[in-house]
Length: 179
Image (cartoon, rainbow, N blue to C red; front, side):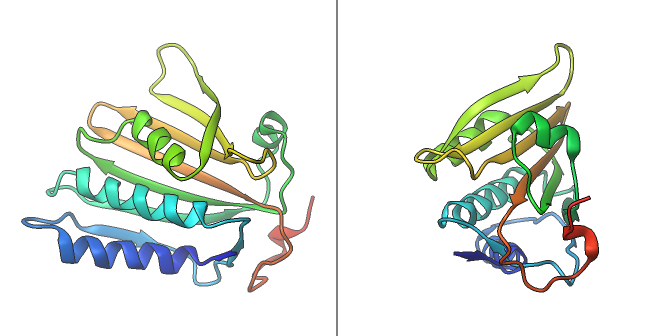
């Protein structure tokens, strides 16, 4: 299954704008034009991104903007050794907003609803940041990483997708070559 992250995000934003009653937050969107399609083993990734992003838009303070950023990362060496994956590249989806409704348990619940289980939550005492590793219930190799930071009413969520398949279109940079 191929995941078009740009298309998913556009669909969610359109649905949100149609369904939200009352004031809506501004949405600041930054997605590189050459973002590749992501080969994934099932539709769990698509369903999670749609549900999680829609929830994030709904709970955000309507007076404050929501930032949605997508980046391609070539290597995250420390994370790769910790998670025990070695992808060609990582796709990072960052959602940042303000408001009281976004907490770590929401992300975990949404992932569980879409067929993923949490392998581990990692945090440092006194820190506002946590990291979680999720994998499909039936498999262990297609891991997803969630980095969550909730400080007062500001929250950031980085969703890291390891891309290990050679089915990436278009091949936009040399970043996909292993270093």
